[in-house]
Length: 108
Image (cartoon, rainbow, N blue to C red; front, side):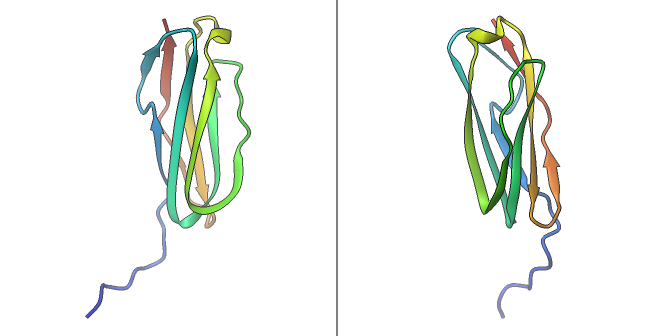
């Protein structure tokens, strides 16, 4: 006998970020935020949401793949020691979605 049949995919996308928890970084240079989303039902869209800083990245839409990976680069010098936070919203093609916990970035 083979493996038990799998039912419909009812789970939302699994999302991981790096950094994954609150962090403090030097206020000069660059910060890279890596995002990986996985879903067997196909990722539809991924959006990096920034709070507390005048930063915005366009949402990646119509991904239509089981794995999505992106690295977002932020120039820290322009923030003038202003802390900010980010979270990631991801949705699959069958309407299930995930919103990650917020990660706070403090600048020293």
